[in-house]
Length: 440
Image (cartoon, rainbow, N blue to C red; front, side):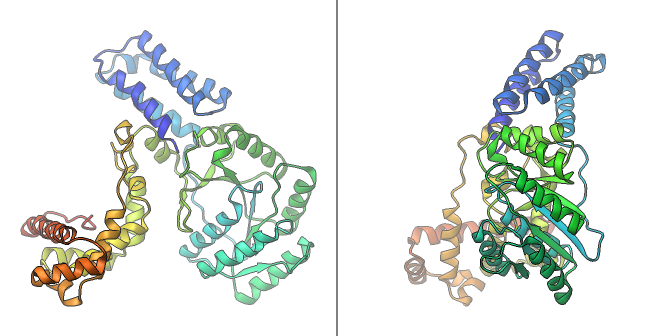
């Protein structure tokens, strides 16, 4: 989402890195370029004005100008101010009540219903037992959608009956349903509109009084730009929301909403929806997002993605196999599937420091190659996966035909696998050398 802004800021700050000394004129010029980049990214103009003023004031201090590394100091200042702009320290999302409600609000089309399911899965992983509650009586498809999503993640759903319009009765049934199923959290998918109106706000206010939710989360479509900020401000004034959620952060919007909403509303961004899959939900960390924008990567998020896909016992077993040279093509296939679950590979690489800079422009991984590798290994017998040295010319032809590929592709995979095993053998000789958590 922040690709264009990241490239522009990287270009601006790179000019400073090439200079041993930095003058006030350099800082003035940098401030103007940063202001232009943020405005082009659709950041609220008042927010931009205050942000640039703070950066300029800190950059002009003697501690920065007269330091041995003034360019690095300015990058540090910009990173810290971006972190503050995005909300500063993050707030852990931990519900305290044993029978609690989380009220999810937002305009129609913001991704609210999908987020309700994503949040349910997130809380389920935390050990809670959620119930998804469909209260959108104006868009019947919303309840159907919620029910489908609930089945996908094995979380129960309580919803209204056909043509039922009494939200109070639906909510009261959901309370009884939660007690019956021993669910400790009700996630309320409320009704939205295409725009803010008094009727909608009145209904939400009534529901808030009745449910007394522990959290009220406003879902904002990142693609809507500055209008998202106006929406957040209106909901905050009427409902006193406890946080915002940014959806469609994997899109190509300019990012102004994310950089403006906290400063304008005074509420923190709690979650970021970073993909279409129900597991593509991240706690929002302002410092990490600032690092991504400035091309510093986000290794912590990358590590969390990896840890989420592999448990400790599996990691130890994998390391043992690699050291003892018993790693097989079956293991290779399993690790490949795990890597694919982490998300699109180009998105994963953007979390690595350096990859999110302008050098990534036009760079696109061919994920079709991974599907090809998967098809080739699936076309092998179990014996061939365990002992690839048995794969002679005739077997290679059979595997190529079975996978819809050519013999050259089979040869390439076998060669790459052998090269990887040679590399891991070097790790195995040095017991003090820590193996990577996975062969990818």
